[in-house]
Structures are given as C-alpha cells and as structure tokens.
Amino acid sequence: QVQLVESGGGVVQAGESLTLSCASSGRSSSVFAMGWFRQAPGKEREFLASISTRTQTTYYADSVKGRFTISRDNAQNTGYLQMISLKPEDTAVYYCALRASIRGTWTFGGQGTQVTVSS
Image (cartoon, rainbow, N blue to C red; front, side, top):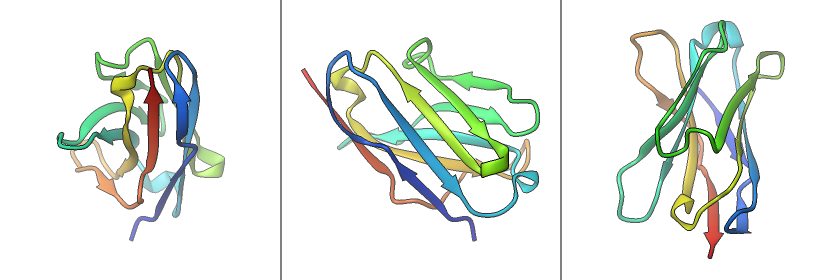
C-alpha cells in the first residue's frame, strides 16, 4: 500500500510563495510518475502537475503553468511543488499521487495539506 505524506501547506497572502513536500514509501524504481492535485471546497479534484520519475519530464495544468514547479528527489522518495505568486483561487487541499506505469491510474495515499491564500 502506497503511503504518502504531504506537508508544507499554510496560510499566506496573495503574491507569496509556498513549497509543498510529498514523502512516499517504497522504491522510486516502482514509480513511473508523481503528480500533484488539489481540491477546493465544493469543487472536483483538479490535476496540477506531474513528473516522470525516470526522465523528469513535467506536465502542468494551464491554471498553474509558469507559477508552479514540480520536482522530485528520487533518492529521497520525495516530491515537491514550488508555488509562487499565489492567488486566493489557489486555496485548496493539495494532494500528491503516484502512478506505477504510463497507463496506470493515480494512487492517492495521504491526507493532503491545506493551502489558504488570503487577498
């Protein structure tokens, strides 16, 4: 069972930055990709970004492109989401997820971390 622990959330003002972390159990060799998602109250979970474990290829949702940067330290089994120029609409619970193969589904295993951006 995948265990993921997200951390780094908090309350910030618009324009400020935060970096989220995602610690995962298991070996990086069994992980094809890591992703970050968020869910705001009353809204569906939204894909934000993903990174391939082997090639470090990244993908971003248009809503965060240019403001968020995903990275992963395979040796530490830890992923990051650097967020700059935060906006009130970025307020949500942020989750990380892992995917075992290119056609696999995302597996979530953490409680998420709350990010609140005040105007």
